[in-house]
Image (cartoon, rainbow, N blue to C red):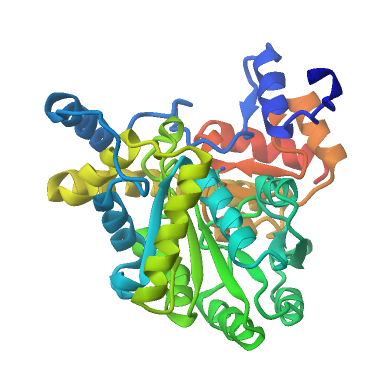
Length: 394
Ligand code: PMP
């Protein structure tokens, strides 16, 4: 059987990680994989996570199965974190999923069930796994313009023009905050116009939120998602706890489906449970329970929020330092966009050949589309990167 298999193209980011490991220069800098790293290059377990895990080990009395949707308290806590009181709880169906990726996969399976002819629209560019999963499921895929190569901001006119052509019932995937891979995000006024455009064509928004708390703050990063949630009869939201709780390998995420009313929410919930049953039965629980423990304990929550704020401010500081260094070294302000971008990534906006020069001549590793992980930097490596960018003639 296996002899019929076709070779799979190697994952670009994972190949980059291997090349970085194999590089013996001690000045090398890893700006590749999308994992938060502190100034020493470590991805720490957050304090509140350690404490919640300690309590779980001490107090948990059973490892019996949860429900198909996962622990209902996890859904309540995540809905509160992301949507606050924007939408009546009775209109929201939700399932715990293995990470944000699991939520995205289940949302797309939901489209297959509920609207098999619908086209899924994604930003150009987007997180590569979006297109990959959509294609794997055999769903029709189209892209809308998103990134303005000249300003490295959002190509807002192009985005609105493309979204105006979406057919009724098509699904439009939007990054709720901290766009991956570009780092460029619409303003809140622009979100209002995006919403008005999608309402006009009667599209179904599908929001991917993987970095709440990494941009402008927990509430600020949820603003666009809340606006969308309040504006449409049906919305899907895939949220990941990997980054903002630092529990990547625990595979913790949630898919929310906002329905027209309580009856439709029950129907949606039953179908989401069915999809969990088909794909893996019960979703993973450990990470979800850690998240619930943190969000529902005022002291733990305050400590988590404080550590997340430090993380967020650290990345903002690195952005500002890099933009300042580049302004001085290149003697112009064309890199100021790095300070305006939000989240863990910025797309530098250069050719694959220049990215290769950075790797070969300077030991600086970024994804070939020039996406850099800002958290891979520290105060000492920022000037080195800035000089390398200038030397490479970017
Ligand atoms: N969406 C986006 C845009 C992402 O960048 C990521 C993580 N790289 C995810 C979803 C999923 O994250 P995970 O499955 O690790 O929770």
